[in-house]
Length: 476
Image (cartoon, rainbow, N blue to C red; front, side, top):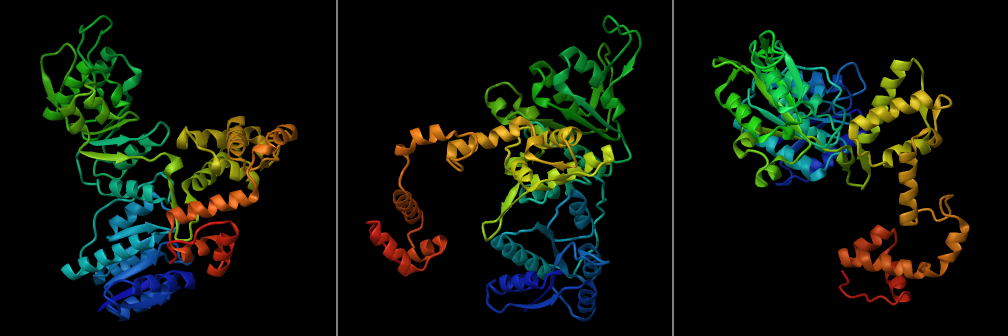
């Protein structure tokens, strides 16, 4: 029988985790102990031989989940950490200290149970283990969504790797920040971190910037110049907008990656360089390869490890009660605090303004959030940020959404005259109710489940279906 320690400062969370663990097959295969205080957990770790510990990181006490991990690891206890506010610092620290894995709150029950089973299986295969050597870094990668957790885990796994990394994602998602975090957490941190935007230079200038040139190589080359690859020797070079380079330059870059040496423009000699390459693009390089616009061999050389940075609109989780938690809220709070530090002024976002910000699609991603928060703190009429202080594009998007979806037909953007003219085209409440129930039944044939969704009992549901002239086939 496996022994598991559950630690959380909320008794209700401990009870929920206990219930989930008890559902893992085979039945009664896990014996569970619970603690709501770090001191209580430490005492249990010192007196009981556990196989696994499930602990929240933030325990609202002098000691946190990382402290408990440091105590549990030497005892051979596998540890899964839970966090309500995920950051890359915590991810790297967890990996450094030897955590089996970590999950963000709210978690998916099936994912948590699967992770527990894998951790217990790992525990059976070994008698404990040493701590890894991952470094903790400072960063502003903010987010606790499952999508960002995957990014954190990949970054944390690259500390001792020299492999090239391709970071992909829409503009403004923070690709350079991911690259810097990889560099800062790596064993190349002592070397240089050199960046260049490949899309901002002509091919000739880009070649000279990256590889250098010798005196007289071209008009204006009055002295020898060292290239960025040589500047980054022993460190990391970040090639942003790699999808913009020309086919002919792709050949030269491929040779550098394959041979590990560069040749200055105008020179017939090559020199060795030891550089870790991280590239980034907002374009689909794989599609460009299929279209013949990007070399296949260069693509695979660049994408030994590929990290996809999700757009902010996709960075969310839905718990088992269908409650949505989004990284957008965390990002807004973070950049509001940064703006306050810069301006020396305290600001508050009114609830209705916060809803507009959270519901906005943010096509510019993290960069747009940063810019908007700086804008509103500079121009708002007081310390409280209201909807009127937000840019028109944010307020306008919500108005368009409300109009298209009839969320609020009496809003100012829908004059009463327009509403009256279209009144006859609106369905009756009875018709809306009939359609709603029909859609539910189409996707969920179990009447008991449909009744639960509607907040009614089965008898009431059957009576309502009869009144609406709906069939009660497939009753279950």
